[in-house]
Amino acid sequence: MSRNQGRPMGPGRHQHMVVGDKAKNTKGTLLRLLKYLKGHTLKIVFALFCIAFYTIGTIIGTRMIGVAIDQYITVLDFAGLAKLCFGLILLYLFSSFFTWLQSRMMLQIAQDVVADLRKEIFVKFQTLPLKYFDTTTTGELMSRVTNDVDNISAALNTSSSQLLQGFLTIIGIFVMMLSMSVPMTIVTVLSVPVMLLATKAVTKRSRKYFSQKQERLGQLNGYIEETISGLKVVKVFAREEKELEAFEEKNYALLNVSIRAEIFSGMIGPIMMAINNATYGIVVAFGAVMMVMTNTVTLGMISNFTIYSKQFTRPFNELANQINTILSAIAGAERVFEVLDAEPEPKEDEDALVLENVKGDVVLEDVNFSYEAEHPILKHINLYARPGQTIAFVGPTGAGKTTIINLLTRFYDIDSGKITIDGKDIYHLQRKSLRSALGIVLQDTYLFTASIRDNIRYGRLDATDDEIIRAAKLANAHEFIRRLPDGYDTILTDGGSNLSQGQRQMISIARAILADPAILILDEATSSVDTRTELKIQGAMQNLMKGRTNFVIAHRLSTIKDADLIAVINHGEIIERGNHEQLMEKKGFYYRLYTSQFKQDAV
Image 1 (cartoon, rainbow, N blue to C red):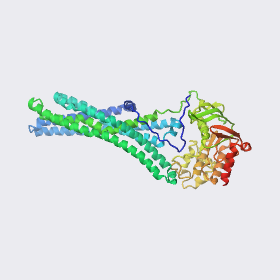
Image 2: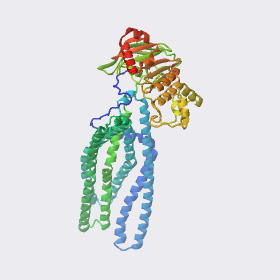
Image 3: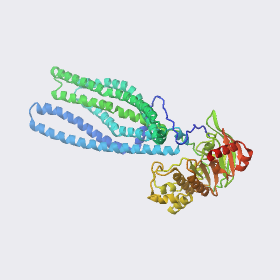
Image 4: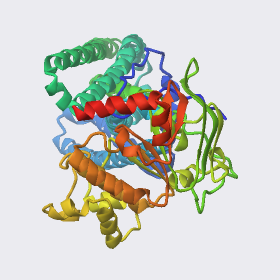
């Protein structure tokens, strides 16, 4: 079992991910993206039929213009010309109808593919280990789910249909021109290699800048998300100017690379236009010479070839116009696939056990763990919690207290040693059943944008309203909920920002009570509230802790005086253990922590 993990940054802290300017696998990305079209074969075939009808109609319509010049206009046959014009009108009306049909079909295909991609990304998020989210900003991930996927949608919706239409146009016009005049056809298509060489030269540079643009956009989104989330801190420390400077640096980095990308991609249009106009003039001049000297070319044919020359090169022009969208889509698809290819949590064994009828007997045996191989975080941790006991972890910041919790929940995997619950190795258990047996109340609670009722019900989705109210009462939350204008139907916004920290904590405790876990983990659950609120929360936690095995990370040591065992952790090792009285008698590390905190509280 591979247990090498990256160091997490913890809640509320983010690391802006910088992606190197590595070469991109354009061909592989396109082939992979095309696989998402497999379930839409019939729709694609129908869209191709519509595109083919429109293309054939356009080609035939152009040829009919030449016929009109040679057979009706030059001989002043207005009756025949009227009939031909009527036929042209019908042909173009039908072509327009089929164009609308294919546009609608391609739009539906594009939206279906985008919906599938977003679903696949969201499903992938559920399988990724915690370390992935600890080392990647929320803004970066959101950029991939929104901006990058939208770029893919735009390319599938417009660029793909234009490319298909262009391909059929090139073949159809080429065949039609050959049937009319081989020399004129050769002159017309001579411009194509020049266009391809020009396109290749420009896109080689612009592709790199479009990839960098997507990366810088993700970094900027991550920074904006982080700054908005910490806006209170920014204002308290009057760091608006500093944040503005940092924003401008990232914004201008995005601006500079965006300008380069747009400049190079924007060069293609004018280059194509110049080549087009030159081809137009050459075709007219050559056709005139052929008409005078060989009499094998008519005025109508010259008219046809001038139109066909533009129609033949139009797909290349459209490719030039769509190059921004296509390159952005390729870069976006690569970034999306990076998420989809990220290493998920290790697969469970097929014979993984279901943890049932949990008593709460927890053992950590010689556990060692490091986020980075050279920097061990936990060293030779041995701990035994009997069912119903309360185990408290104390120690300085960074000592490894929260890391032990992350290992119990298998958010991270140990390097060596063994962790068992009721005698079963947690690495032989199904993660879902393991985590269902654990209840966690964190210092930084998270509440969803939903009603208070639904936030509490998140602990057990089949809970009744009466059970929800009972859990709220045990959490000392019922009274303040009842006084809210909409009571339990009050909608919480932005992680519960319309409630106080203590109220959010009590709702979190109610959620844990409703889940009824056999093992409870409290991570400094009262460190961010006032004394009065702390007493209410402590009362709620006492109700929650009854009859369970409890692990408590304590910030205020006065809250864990009644713990059955206090483990003092420093530099990743348990340096003292015992109950409050025993540790105070030793007058060691715990004694110094407690007395220093007591003096601070007294002041």
